[in-house]
Amino acid sequence: MNLLLWASLAGATSDFDATSPAQVFSGKQTFTQDGSIPLWSAIERHTDPNAALFAQESFNQGIAWQDGEYSPWMKSCFGSSTPASSDFLLHIGPNEATASGTPILLVPGAGDNGSRGFITLASKMDQAGRPVYAVTFAHPHGDVFMQAEAVANAIERIQERTGAAQVDVVSHSKGGIATAVYLSHHSGADWEHPAYTAHGTPYRGDVRRSVFIGTPLGGVDTLYRWSGNNYAALDAETTFSPSSWSAYYPYGTSAPAWVTDLSDQDMLADGADIFPGQRQILARQDHPLPGSMPWLGVYAVQQDWYTTYEGGFGFYSYSEGIDAAVVEGGKLLTHLGDNGADPSVELFILAGTNPLMPNATETLLAQVFGQAWVDLSTSGTDLWAELLADALGNTMEPFGLAQEEVQGLAQGKLLLGEITGPSDGVVFTDSATHTDALTGRGAVVKETRTANLSHLDLLYASTITGSLLIAQGEADPTEDGWKVAVGTRYQSEDTLGWVQGVLADPEPGDTGDTGEPGDTADTGNTADSGSPETGDTGPEDTGPGDSMASPPDGGCSSGCSNNSSPANGAFFALILLFLPFLRRGQSRPMEPQA
Image (cartoon, rainbow, N blue to C red; front, top):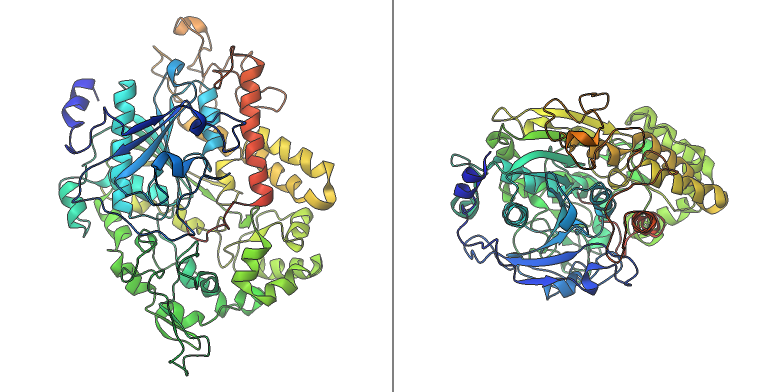
């Protein structure tokens, strides 16, 4: 697509001005919260003034933005803990000024931000010399159509900054649904959403490749499937996740005078509607419900599991059921499949198959599973091994469970996520690989890859992070032995290296380089372009992630004066920033949605 054509289309949304951010931050806000590590060269806040499409969505204390370890300076950059959904943040890579090639936009999932889940991949691609950007949506569980427009606006701003005709987009979890909506929006698209149909930006041919990581293309039903999660969502002001119950009766439904109204935090639009985007990604999943699977032991103890899913009064709750929530969400995923992504976009899918999630917290598990979990968490490894053997024999595919991981489960340091079918702990694998959601207009998924990793591990796995985890586990096998098994999988799967290969640019003048392993069209000779190659496959370039002994070369993070060890130090500092995330979990409990 030439620049003239891009210029003719770029103004499709006349209200958004891609030339003028509302505010630019280049000081402390570009660092980690403690100021120790530079993350970005700048962060821009943008506003789309289209009042017909955007609105002020509701927050509670649990999801309102704060300036914290895992949401560094987010409140400060938005200028509010509860920003309007017309706002978004664009995070700009440290080496944008010297970067080249197709720009990369990273789109995070629910409850995440541009400086958390994607920060390791952002650093890797920045060190490789690519222009890297990330978006943070105003509402962490916001309406998908508003977020789709924010993706379109972010792409337009990146084009304004770089002059690029196209960008590559890498999306995680729910963020991938927003990206897919933009790629699928055209003049004949039907969304059952009048505001987006009238005011949303039709796809402008501005995406070269789109990578979907752990994206629930076929939907999720987590909170209807695992009804015990609702006990952690009874307080509307503090809950981190929505409830699939609309009412809770602490003395039983036979005593209706005592009732807790959950309409503010349920999946429906009435009440405060704190989690509007969650109902839009709901869909029934073709796997048995845990309440019908007694071999799951404590995991099968799900209060009112049948009425939660199908609707009606249970012993202690009332639910409208998942079908009612899907309808109220506008059947977005059905329309996504019908509309189809633009056929010109190269599509790639990465899905996880391992439900062991290394950011569990005993507090959250006790909230979800009650005293039964407390008893189980203090049990020996034999009980866990028996439970896992039953689950693997009945519902799951083998995922290489190691003895160290069984020990980690018994210690409460690992959480066994979704186990009623093959999954990454949050999203069923067959949902994350549901290509029909993208191919309705003839688009082709060029590669679908599965990896033996959990939902968040998909964003971190490389040979370098694997080596660091193994070293930590070997240093303290009693407390951290589980890290050896996780680190070994990181080295084997190397999903960050896979993403880098998928997004590889052909060398200048080389039309045959596909970026695929084994492609010899790239000569690796600097004479190809007259300058050092960021993707050189020559013998002196090991590339990021090839081995811990061969750290990445490339541009330097803020404050460095050369391209040698200081840059490598910044890269490793960002990896080390990620490691406590595995050990301690988030500053808030892990949310069970996508």
